[in-house]
Length: 168
Image (tube, rainbow, N blue to C red; front, side, top):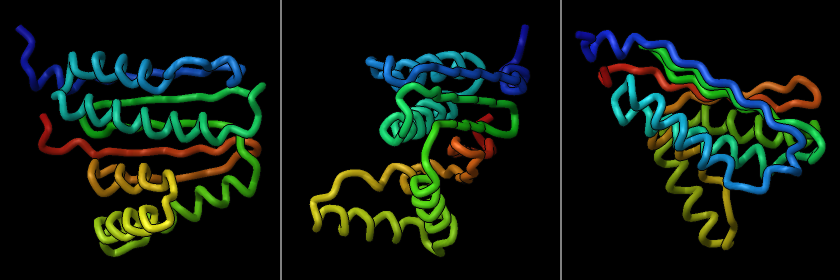
């Protein structure tokens, strides 16, 4: 009989590439997020699989909303093992979009108190009736992900990492 401890040592990797982006007419982030949540939940605690769904939904939606070439592709890679949950999303953007995302992630990664940044951003966005701007902050503040960003022209690469500890 396999034990829960042995299940939690399972390595799982998924990779999705879809092109052209203009043909994505469904709620792709929900479909992929729900699938990965169910698959990961077969081996890991539900809070780990739920975090996978949350990060996939956020990063994939951001990529789809900010894709600058509808004839291009979008990619997602997920890996989970007994130590980490890593999700990487790749999509085409111009240098200006990359700089904007990089500045946002740098700000998130450099603040002393992420909850203060979240609170201030909520108040600022509400005051100006602006949409968006909270998702990546919430990934860090509420879900304890680490974020990084890179640019390999023309692709923006956003990676999230959640260190598994105490879930098993």
